[in-house]
Length: 453
Figure 1: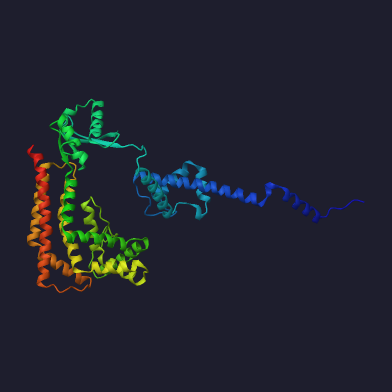
Figure 2 (figure 1 turned 60 degrees about the horizontal axis):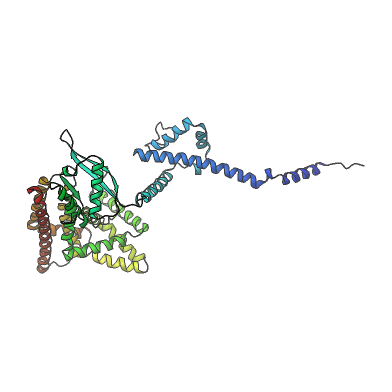
């Protein structure tokens, strides 16, 4: 007698067969779906990266004024993605069917990709991949039309940076291009000893072969070095910049404190606008950060001082918040910093160096103009001397009034300014101005022989 196969038996048999079929294993099905999603996500991300790179290289804005679905111009980034989809149906379908979490087109994704690209570029250009000592050569000449032209000529590998090796490298390049080194009429380098040395420096070696190749130190760099030396020669100013550097490190050492500083600054700007103390308009009242000063750039010191004056009140608020909420050594650092920056001496020097640096920075910027000549440079220096002299003779009362107003606007107690303190402040102002005048005068003295010759 035969056995009848019921429907239950067939269902069980089918389940058994499916269990033994690896192609229908749920794990394999999930892996197949995951791999397909991974492939699609990568394709969408590649299209996004391409669009970001294109916008960055072309230096065009990413976003449009209207990026809604019915907009006829959604901005450069989205229009580039649209163009890619127009010529590639597969890519167009991928973006149309993509889940919202895997579109990779949001502004935050664009910024993240840009940040990764910039980090990689900076990492590559920060080191010399050739692992060789190289010298760059720039030629300045007058063309057949009488126009002064300046061009980058190339990079030269040198075994070391001795003056003789550098000279051999320069002569080799000139000879290779059929240029006579005896026709050199000028040479300019930095102030390193192997370059400017009077007897064995590069400029001295070339001057022996070409007596008309006068050596010129960079005007702006020479002035900045002189100004830095002048500031270091005044104890009060040297102490001020040391305190300023420490203070900026305390106030903006972490992203949290930087955010707190920006929030405090935004509240301050909003309040000043509400009481009609600030004008509104495009580009006005920008929220910034405290600037750190560089050792070789005088303009960076001006930016550092100006940023502190502009953000003085928000910075004090952040320091007080750190004192109240902080723990450990940071509380002590914030407390000592707050005590320092609210003293009359610190605020006095803060405004004093800003006044001086605004005058000298104009000269620094003018000397960096490509078409600047020595005669005009000396005129600029002379006018700077006059401005500094005028400041020394006439600006004391105005500076003191400015500082008093600065304290009153920020509700900080003004100390009792006795006649003795007035004398000390006046002497400090005179000593700083005189030192700057003397250093700049010395700079002129070393520049004059270039005109005489």
